[in-house]
Image (cartoon, rainbow, N blue to C red; front, side, top):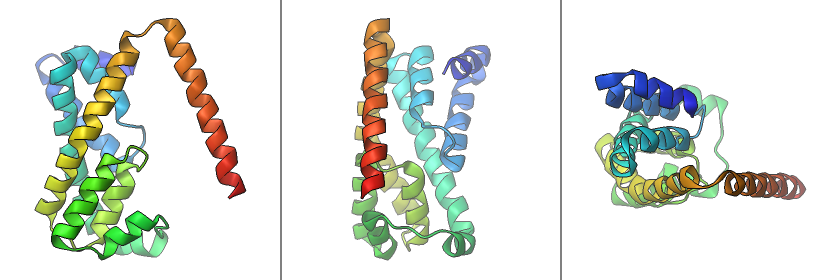
Length: 181
């Protein structure tokens, strides 16, 4: 996160554009979770402005990802298969049904954005409908993310250590539980 904060700080008047581009890169390549960029945005721009900037960046990133994935649809269909039942359901949805499902999937914090983008690109949903469903669905999720990030940024070192330990504990439990099923 320090790298992103430094990049935004050094960018001067281009910081907004740099933030949006960073969100697009994260969305297209799904390399790192977007909460690092949200945390950097809140640190540099403040809570409200940082959150709005993250929403704009994530919405544009999702749209560009959707378009790129749709263009490469034949490659994706032959190399990857989707096993998540909600994402499989999205493939067959059209119109308003697809809109509602994308909106709902964006509300669920444990469904990676990249998977929603890929599944939506496999469906027959129109691009503009995807953009609005995705963007509107991101608002509550991003509010929760921004609030959580803001709280962590303001917490003490001890609180951060406890949060890290709890996260590692939950992650370890999930890893072993998932292996058994």
